[in-house]
Length: 283
Image 1 (cartoon, rainbow, N blue to C red):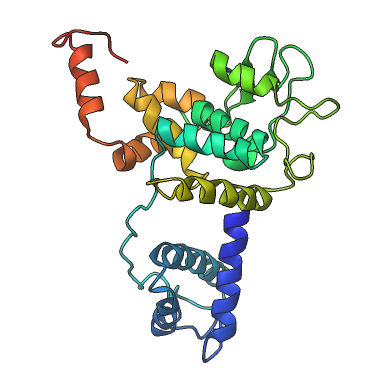
Image 2: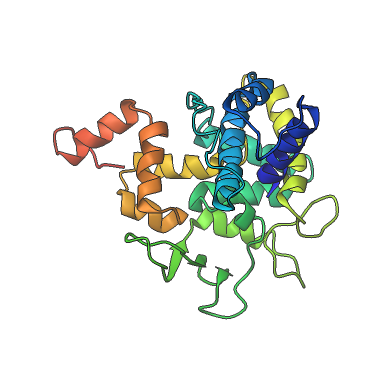
């Protein structure tokens, strides 16, 4: 995936520029600290590189090359999350911008992620169901069918079907390409997206148009998955219900909500309506 490839490049550059060159046998805690200082201005990258280095040095210990792992003693403060949650207005603005720049399939992908919150790398490769009950999107009934890899007890899961809105059904119907099983295609080539790198490049153009049109926030595509979790919780869905849609484990959903779910008026009003203290139905 794109993120892991970029991290690998960072680690490779770190090794190439380090003086003296790191050695799995003689690397010290001070060496690790000095190498990581190169990423003081990128705390999230610094955190992940330390994690990767620790795994590598665990292998060095396991192979008997050394007795200790020098990375364990290097303490870092967990970086503050920078994920920005999408709102409905953000989705609408970016979807229309995608259509404007000749990328209607990217608009459809944004709307799909907003409703079902799948991994971006999986969403890019979503296909039509070749027959009723098959994995993929069944346009005849507006349902996705997935194999969820995790269940509440952490064991391998079965298949789950997810129905989408009438609006998304119409959007997807207008984007189907004859002869291609894929749902989303690159408007510049007419072919399916080869990888997330290309999609990210296309989205940069979409985002630039949105940012140039007014007072909008700088958002990233990957945050749509987080946003789907948050919006489902705002609507009053339970953690297991959310996990059944997005495919996260229940533990992961709970952690994400702890970090990203705003304690705002929408959530508070919904809670009071559920208790029957305030008129109106809970959303």
